[in-house]
Amino acid sequence: MIMNTEKPSETGKSPLKANGNGHQVLSERPKPMVTSLKTVMTKMTSKPRPAAILPIPTEDPERTARIRDRARTFIMPLVAIFFVGLFWEIYSSGQGVVLPGPIKTITESWKLIAHPWFDNGPNDKGLGWQLLFSLQRVGMGYSLAAVVGVLMGILIGKSAMAFKALDPIFQVLRTIPPLAWLPIALATFNQANPSAVFVIFITAIWPIIINTSVGIMRIPVEYENVAKVYQLRGSRYFFKVMLPSAAPYIFTGLRIAIGMAWLAIVAAEMLTGGVGIGFFIWDSWNSSRLTDIIVSVFYVGMVGLALDRIVAKIASLFGTRGD
Amino acid sequence: MSEAMNDQIAENEAKFVDISGVHKLFGSGKSRYHALAGVDLRIAKGEFVSIIGHSGCGKSTLLNLVAGLNMPTTGSVAVNGKEVSAPGLDRAVVFQSHSLLPWLTVLENVLVAVDSVYPDKDKKFRMEEARKYVDMVHLTAHVNKKPAQLSGGMKQRVGIARAFAADPQVLLLDEPFGALDALTRGSMQDELTTIWEKNRKTVMMITHDVDEAVFLSDRIVLMSNGPAATIAKVVEVPIPRPRTREALLEDSHYLEIRKELLHYLIGTGMHSAAA
Image (cartoon, rainbow over all chains, first blue to last red; front, side):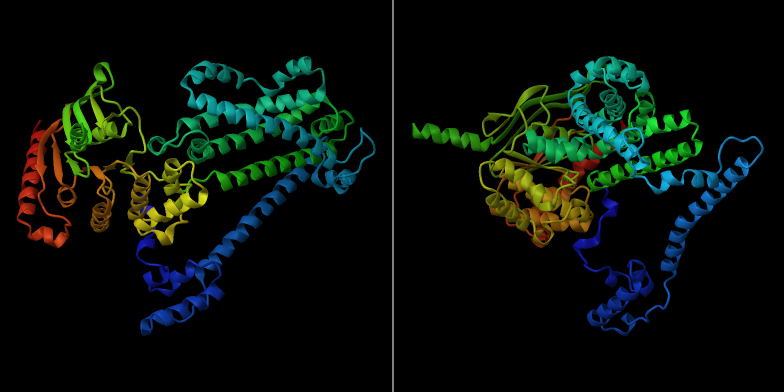
């Protein structure tokens, strides 16, 4: 299909022969200083024409441009953070403002920031523990949602009958806000912890089901025909055609789901209590420790970002299509 | 008694692929489309038959019926005396859009067919078998590459290797070189004749390239324009084999057949443009 992106590997081997211009060749290489020498050497040995001997360029304009671009990627966010912090500090230092500024937050909650792993019994643990307990609940609910969601997605993606039967139900259920499930879960399980896990499960499962089923329904006809003609059935069809073909969609669902799961856990824990970042924030509010709340919220954001990036990374390992 | 059996075998071989009275309709109601109307075609064992016609004349529909990817609305399709009811390894297809599985390497794509042919043999045997077919299409150096790393011609060669690896009774080629540039197409046609001369499989090829059809085929089937397309004409190609491109140009039949085909195609083309 993508005939234009074909590589000319059939005819020539090295791109060096193709373009006689030294700069072009060097610009394709990541480490110009080392490889530039090599390129010129191979050029000299393989093509001993005077035109092939080129001077080593002393500076590579594309490389400098790349370094400058990379530096900007790191520096610009720091500049932005500095200004946000500055305006926040200015706002907080105003008359009658309750919100603590960044400097006050860091100094007052320094104990919390510096010692994330302190443990003074069940009601007084460091932020590291709080996050770990929340992550554990998310991990359980999310894993369960991933397994059940992918299986359900395959079912309604493959069977038109199952799709007709279940899709309307899913469409209603997926619009229910996560916390609306909590009372039902509490009534069912009679315990806080499984209820929180259930809320994560029910929040994360919908995007996984829906994206998986779309991925299964969109397996290209060509691959289906290959499977039919060359008799790929059962587990061979599952692993060689269906999963790889639907993988990009499945991982999109998993990535949306991890974000939603992390959004839901804070709210769920505020209501269920126990150790966990959600209840810690609520507890800090009840004891008027505003700076602790700000630090916790910052950590919640960082963990959420990390979760998203981890799933995205796994997706990029499995979810790419070669064609 | 043995004479009767021999007769039976001879009859089967004469109509190895037997398409009789085939109509194919798509859709229903207003969007109903009569694609094929009364197609009768017999292909003998070891024969190379090309089907040529304008785009949309139902050539590919006909091929899909033989492949078992589609069923005729009325009429029947049989291969080696057996009614076609589903796709099978005895009728391997080389698809127009190469249709390699992009997440598998060249070798793994060929293994897909080999594994289905020999589900009971051990891994080593199957690997060797797959390698044999990769060698056949001269891709030995690229066994571990993914399709995205290959050129269009190489991808199609993997498709051909996969089809031969299924060890089919009939090889179905659906415009196999349609997406390739003229030079690659020429060398692929040469390669295909060389492979075909060695094992003489029964081949049904869809094409819209007149030269390709004349160069490769024993018989050329001309289809009329759709809707309700049918076989308009069958042209024999009595050019001796093995054929080479150079010898072809000298052959008196070649120009005659070429002229006949082009005359028909241009004529129907004008007709359909006027209609």
